[in-house]
Length: 72
Length: 151
Image (tube, rainbow over all chains, first blue to last red; front, side, top):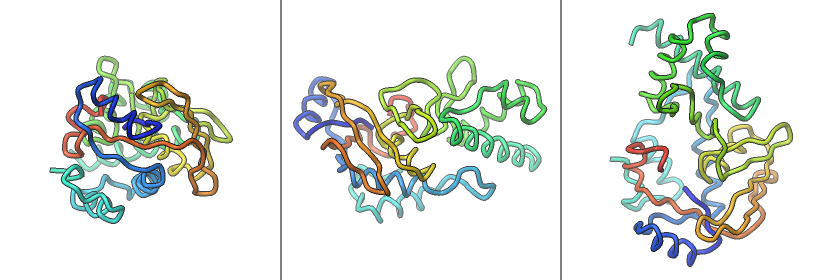
């Protein structure tokens, strides 16, 4: 996941590397995703990876509901 | 996996994250072995099981940790400055994730992946400030772990 100064620069990067345009998030969306994803304390014994369904629900809470975010 | 092994791996995972959150980088095999009074091979096996469970990402040949997400064991283009240390994240999501994980303000230094222009973001009291920009996820979520280093 890379950072770009604008959508035009994302398009230029995709053209250069022959990559399809993926999903674009604002910095604020990325911050909310980071907080949700990395908030639970991984030092805790009870911590475990999210199931696919839990991750899907988390993405949905953040409005990430396009097929790009499907985990299977 | 046997229960004793599961407990050992849970403890190793807790140690890896405690170490990384305090220092900004994950521990080496030798440090982990000493911590748990086990051989380096036993520590390597535990790292491998945690990698198989997609909790860690290992360096291919050495078995050392490459990523204890969001932390990177090696220098990257995503520098995160906290009050106590400066460290490297695996991507922009992880750069934001370090601040979220340690619950501290930070300064993120990276660059536009297209043109190289320097970019600085600041997390201040749960708000992102700094240069304008966008995050691009190139790989669809279901393919992330096919090559997590590329992702």
